[in-house]
Image (cartoon, rainbow, N blue to C red):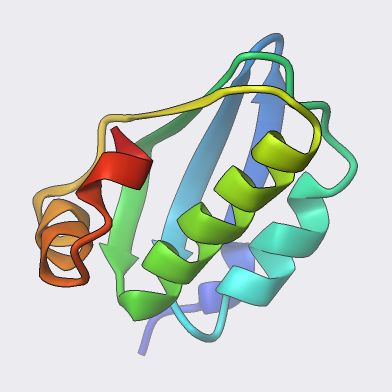
Amino acid sequence: MTNNSIAKVTQVNDRWEINGDVLITTANNLLKQSQAFTIENTKIDFANVTDVDTAAVSLILEWKRRAEKENQSLTFINLPANLTSLVQLYDVAELVN
């Protein structure tokens, strides 16, 4: 069993770097961590994500809602293949790209 408590998001300039698993057990914590960060044409980088489930899609949609509310844009980069599949399955690819 993996230690999901190490999932984290850090902000480096205009980039948020996601590390670890983005699962139902970690998504709320990642959301809370990101609330301290600014969104100003931000890139959210999934290069260091190890595993995802449908909670990752929910997290992406919540970040998009926040960006729209703040009149800012988000770009999601380095999505793992399994997250890309979930985004397509739920027909929200236009919101992620």
